[in-house]
Image (cartoon, rainbow, N blue to C red; front, side, top):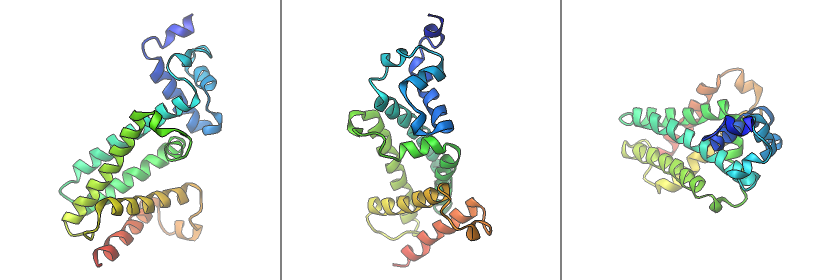
Length: 203
């Protein structure tokens, strides 16, 4: 009974936070309702008051992670709104920094771990908000003349793919060491982003 009352009134968030900790330490294979309950210090049956199954817990964890990412990116985007090119760089770096600091969470968010996304409308909504933020950053660069006047949504997909792919290669240690020895990660990201700007703007 003492365990049940420990997180009284906030059990759901306690389980989500416990799940995030498990992802950080063990990865997705270590996550289950039972392991989250143990981490949170509650009985094995307690999670079922909030989560039907592991999928629901993963969706809640991913929703919280995407909300944290959105808050971080939107703050940076607003801070550099009047400096479109710097805004672009800083948003890309904030995205990268999130991946580096919350790698387990990042990998789960952008995986196929959630099998029925539309069963979790909060997850879908925050996913769309993050994408629209990227679109807005692209539009701001287009307005300033740094990017060509193509469909900003398609352009956002292409740019997002490039930055996300760069991060994935870095996390999986697939970038040649000869390149990493010459450049720290932030500077290397800037050079990757530079490949986006000038060639596209010249078309």
